[in-house]
Image 1 (cartoon, rainbow, N blue to C red):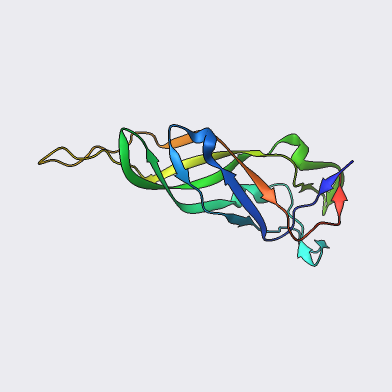
Image 2 (image 1 turned 90 degrees about the vertical axis):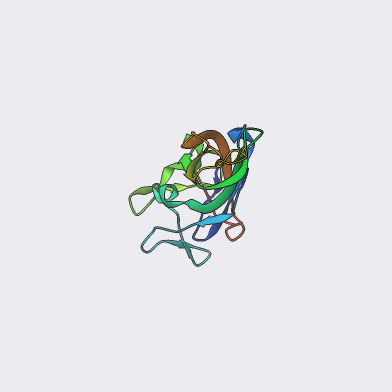
Length: 149
């Protein structure tokens, strides 16, 4: 049994619980269709590789209790699970992306969270450049008809 094919402008929802101790306020984003000609429900199909371009820029984060002053970063798809690609169906010689299960996500720090400053000095920045362990999923709301495997 197959799963729904992900198409252009499908919502990407982030589950940041795995990034602990960092607390991240995710921004929903979309994945863009990459097929040149093939469409489902009048939208371009998302092919293998489209996930690498998904970015939720400007997500605010903190790393309490040590770094309670918010910083900013970007959420990205780290890796899709094998079940999120078609095995049999090819779209313009590439695998299509399927709604599937949760994928692995990564949070990269752009501006670090900061410590509360002691009197007469500035606070120190969070030294972590990235957080791993979070997840995300595709919320396919357009294509609720066409499945593939």
